[in-house]
Image (tube, rainbow, N blue to C red; front, side, top):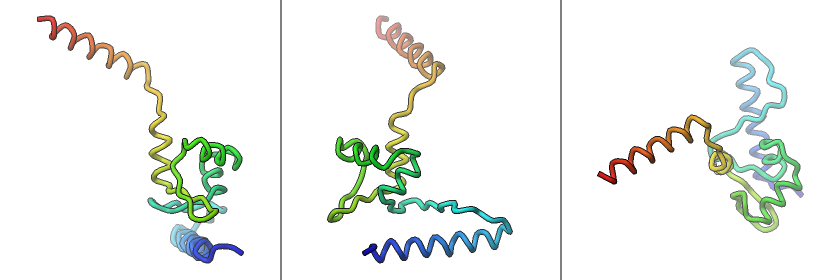
Length: 112
């Protein structure tokens, strides 16, 4: 038996998608409409991140991905997933060189 709140959210998303299509005059093929704090299930997060469902379960097990658990179900907030992805951002060479220059300047000032 599916969660009635998930059914309601899916139907509202369908209605919203149809309204946007009607307003813009173009057809959006099964494009999900993400809202700021929308709760997603494991399958939706896997699709959003282009990962396998098993990978999501593995990340949950390792406590590496932010999630909520209600009973046996897992939920994820899109904003928290976006923040989590942003935390693993790698710096560019320009940013690293700028940090090195700033460090050397501070060191020189500290000696005098």
